[in-house]
Length: 168
Length: 450
Image (cartoon, one colour):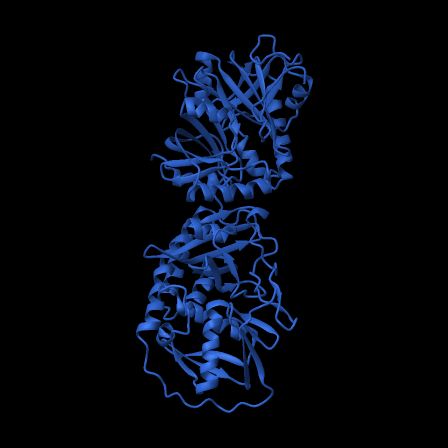
């Protein structure tokens, strides 16, 4: 098994498939020079076809601290959770960079919001509530891309936090 | 305006799970979902420590963390910049969180997986309102106005029974709480007994629960409010379980347990201890079949209500024993006719049966037996609280025991179970016994044969 944080780390096929589920709840954190974390909710994601690059979308106003920190140190952690099963996976990276979103990304953000609203509707959450949660104040979407260098299972239970490798 | 935790505590009721970010000393951030963030006070929150995970390892090495929470009605988001201080593994906060976590675990299919090892306490350094869209807060019941109205009604009560009734009626009228009960403490027995209830098919007056059992019992033991937003079997209080089926010496099956009333599908529960002058008097319990029916505001309102209820209970009990009004002349009881009603008294635990029906046991059973003996032997019908307090035949468990509450329970139980023996309040601190059938009293000293 490839060790986490190894330069050879690559996402396993199952984990990549999980990360491509459209209605995952996504929250990411970076940290300041003095190791104080800053966290923001992502408004969608895009995993590259070779599974090597993860891109998260944020509202720039919301994620101000996170964007500032990754500019300085590139450190990022992001948790992806499936509300219906509590299955969760955390990715880490050290080369996070903010970039302008692609033209097609705004469609991804809209589609993600619709999928997440639909999914949570089944659990009694009002669509307007979840819609408000995922709608940026203005069109200030920013994309943050990083190379996942480690992955950890975070499904609740005693095994939460265990590193997962590519051979899974 | 600087935000304080109390302004955003609705976000901490776990309707939408929060997340926590921490950072390892090597600069690697970590982010994870939280089962629970608990409001401690204006400047502190607590999170549940359930496993030794990365978050736990990080905060022990670098105490600065961040929590992101979402308002359940408006979707407003708040970032809490926090600093880890310590972990508590017992006491009121721990028990409050443990009970709540049991509800959350059961609701999310995590029963048996979520187990509270400790309450991690953090100082809140700053709260940031996250820029973004949110919705207007829907209009809601004003708990403060309700509290004032309830308080007004309670303060005009002149006896304990009236106070109990007005309290329960106020919960319904001003807080929309339809299912409630009041329980009083029997300290030496370590039990609570129900003296009044509202909203149930059977009142359950006289039913008991041990201190430490369920939401009610834990609230009494910890002297802390316990609130659960989802159904959990772990804190179910075994209502309607009639375990104490026993046989008397003649092989007659006796059922001597009054089932505790309760909603069959109780999803939200809140138990608030009633204290006066540092002493626990009882517990006020409310429940609902709705999930997350009771919030922090309801809890505050009921705690404030209980703070008035405690001293009022204490004062009305004192008055009932000290400011007794002159006795009416004890006229001979009216003649009664018909078949005799068999009254059995089991001396071992003061259990009383009227005919084949279980009525009551314990202190209230002891009191009733003395009343009935005096009625039969001395033709007495008029009694006072003060003389009962001093009567050596009555074994009150301690000097502070609420005799008046025992009488309220007995009066209510008699009214519910049998029409042939009644207790009627005649004046402050006095009541009369009304018997409408001849009685045959049997004292059974051998006790119940199991």
